[in-house]
Image 1 (cartoon, rainbow, N blue to C red):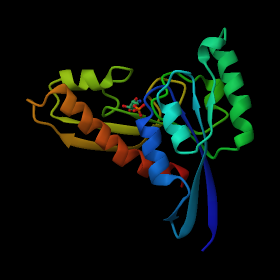
Image 2 (image 1 turned 120 degrees about the vertical axis):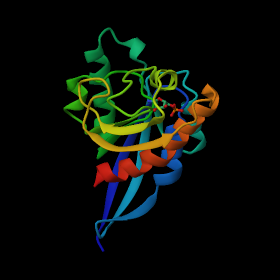
Image 3 (image 1 turned 60 degrees about the horizontal axis):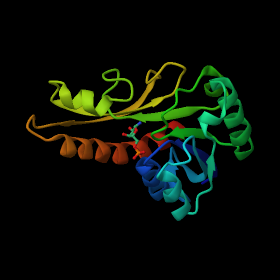
Image 4 (image 1 turned 30 degrees about the vertical axis):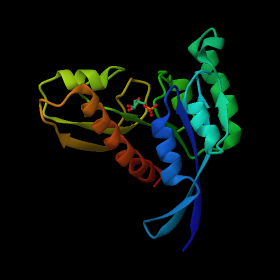
Length: 196
Ligand code: GRF
């Protein structure tokens, strides 16, 4: 069987638990997809926030972590131009957004195929408060979405979703922990699907 190497770059802004989970589940591992062997390498992580806890997680896992603070740039275009300059030599097959809290413009999205994980059943609850809004809603069916990134926030084509039925008397802490469990289960699978 032929082996193809797939190179991933992960972008994050804060805690980095999804990034760590992806590294544990995919980095330097081989998967059989459609009769071919696919080997995944996380070639680097990038944070736009120099205080992000995830930077230490990446270091502990021996993954290069570039820090490109968006605050150092006057415009979104300048920030993304530098991101593109730093990421291009890494030759990624896919950019994986994992808690990356900046909207990417067509400038970036037209250069790299990128995917994102979002903690709601899109198109419901787009934006940064999805877990709270989903918790506050009357929806019993809740979940997470892995989708392609386009220039519109949380709006690209769906790759996969994972769902659960909640008890309406769950507290917020429990609710959030179950959302994150779904993310950790779904996102590595969605990445392999996207790479294919
Ligand atoms: C996750 O809930 C993800 O869905 C959202 O941001 C959060 C990031 O958490 N986009 P972490 O940094 O991976 O712990």
